[in-house]
Length: 95
Image (tube, rainbow, N blue to C red; front, side):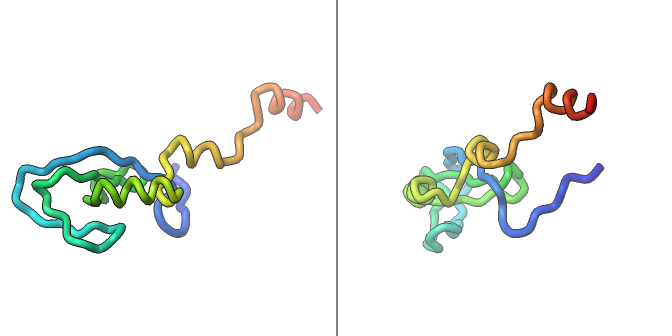
């Protein structure tokens, strides 16, 4: 069974510290400024998908987190409707 599709951007983000050793320059997706890979920065993984990872300034990520624009998986799950409990499903079935 395929996973349900959703419209729009990622529902949640995973962020972790990174420091690349290859001399490359990235562009921060949050502010648009250049980001030298040899500097300490963060990786953003939309919905934990490493194939879509983005390199971002640490300060930009922290500011976006404070503003609520980069929710974690746990924060996103807390906003989702909870499925009925086992007891509620059993009571419904008994009716």
